[in-house]
Image 1: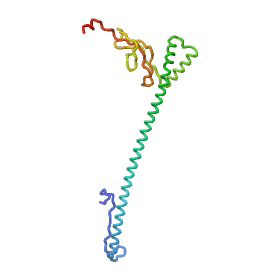
Image 2: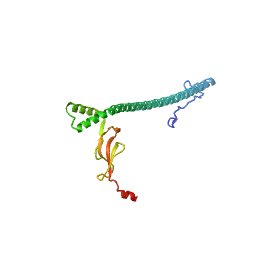
Image 3: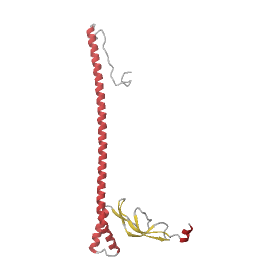
Image 4: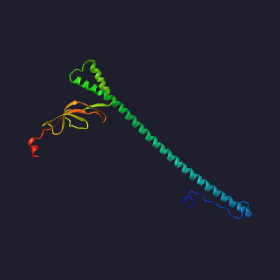
Amino acid sequence: MSTRENGSGEEPVIRDNRKIDPETGEARSQAEREQAEWAAQAGEAGQSAAGLAAAELATQLAERTADLQRLQAEYANYRKRVDRDRAMVKEQAVAGVLSELLPVLDDIGRARDHGELTGGFAKVSESLEAVAGKLGLSAFGAKGEPFDPTVHEALMHSYSPDVTEPTCVEILQPGYRIGERVLRPARVAVAEPEEPAAGAAGDN
């Protein structure tokens, strides 16, 4: 089995110590044998130096590859962070503009409720609402839905036998959100289940 088959990466070193020159058939002198030995040692040294150089190159290649992978990862993270910051700035800018338009939308809603939204004003208001919708603005708050303090602001409170939990019985002003971000909570009148009798409260 050869050295390569045994798993060693180095070539075998052959030293020519023969006293008879295989080419001429004549006896070699001591000087010739020493010269052959030196040549063999020089070849062995060259192979060793080549192996060290190859190992050093492999190490440098691994280091440069690791550096490149690290730079690629850092650049990818930078791109993600920039894209996230850009989206956040855009969302904040849109939210700021739409927040200023909410009173206008409230006026449009009141005019519609009173039947005053007619003619050219109706077309303008529809266009404004359409643009706000394209920017992601949506209204929420409906009569009869359960009261949620994270999205509702209770302006009025009462008791009612018709409900089994705190419920929005009137929408005084709709709420608005962009995506999951609430720009303004819905302002509502809330009713709770019927107030317990005073006697029952006194027994406790």
